[in-house]
Length: 184
Image 1 (tube, one colour):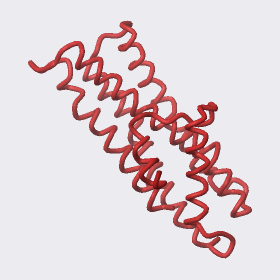
Image 2 (cartoon, one colour):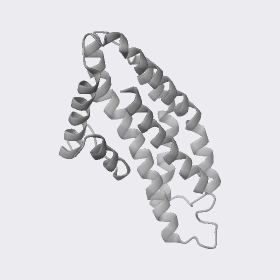
Image 3 (tube, helix red, strand yellow):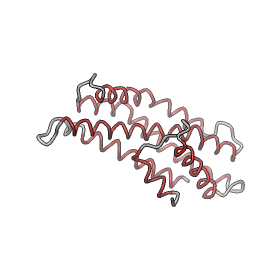
């Protein structure tokens, strides 16, 4: 399961890095246009949606399931606390994106980078720490076959995302990963 988490974490880091790297080019280069800027803002909003999706799915489905299997209440508590550590920065960034998309904010690549820089150190640390915690699950191998458990849990996440029940909503950027990882 840690290997799967590493793949998702790497995807999220690369997505955020792509927004950070392109923030200056969008809106300023000779190839830029209002349409390109708007598309970039939607792309970046999709990244933030993916991060929110991931952490809601963890807190609502994955972490409680891990705690049930291990029998250790609060096993993933540190990870939930770390989510709280970067939520404010994500919310500020999302508010800026929504404002820019709604015409209330002017696009500003410097501001985008500063907002990303505001939450990324904590998010990056969390993504590393979470994998370290998951690697300790091998202590519970006598209770569960983790590969089968993970497949079942991902199936539950997929069912929730397809139902649109409010627990999990899948941004476009992650749909192909979910389908590929579950052989759909």
